[in-house]
Image: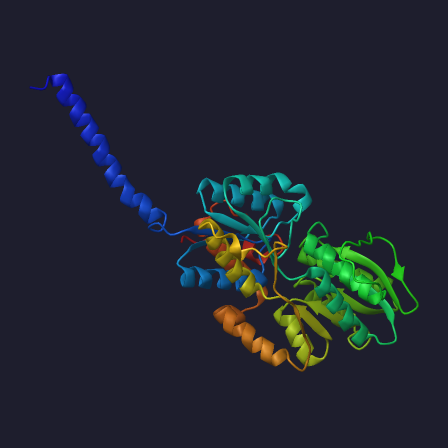
Length: 381
């Protein structure tokens, strides 16, 4: 016969086991009933990333994976916070577009130590990432330079515009344009520091203006270039929002017939400019595939399958040129990927993305690039 103390001990043990059994279904439900959970982290908020999100979510549906998408509005600090929150959730892998890979190496090491790290869109080859998914930005930059040559067959003065040069993709795109216009050999490791005029007997690349994703500053940079360089013949926007803002500045200055615009990515205003003849062309990526392939590779790696990683640890998704002869076909394709988002202007899409992010990410901060979101009256949701 058991003593009173033994009975109490048995009851306590039973109660503990019973409590754990109640918690296990809740844990399984929280973790998607045993499904892998992977994260796709962007380098900002932009319609470009909305397309990538569509691809990541579709891969999640097709491959039975939980997908978490995070878009940091405020740069490096927000990206770090979001990554650390994901790591605290014990996600199985993270595909990240590093904002400043050289100065984020500790964060990238932390991801690799606690989960699976791959990069997408912008690489960090010195980090312990297992794979990079994206286009060859240097080659794409050279493609952009080819469009400049088409715009200015007789040469002329060119100005480059980009968000920031801390990102590897921005540096490589810029260098590709420079090397193509200077008729140099193909060398992705070359780098011309900004601040000096780079020229040959045909083309003069006056400068590279950065704006740190600040749209008013980006337009001010374009206006300043027009005002200070009366012989400027071509403006090249290397991030999606740069070309439309250059186009606005050119239109405001009454120089639509004098200054050509060469674009990068698939901003609606740039595509409309190609149709109207105010933009020569654009070099586009495939963000949908960035999202889809990132989820596919992360799931395989989480299951121990490393055969998905190419020998050189780079999964290149080719860029392509969009000109007037193929812009309508491309735009139809783009709208099918964006769905309802394609009917809205980029700022509206971005604001709705931030609102959606705040519901699941209370720490998300307002994006100063889109001040209209801060002017909206507060509503109870």
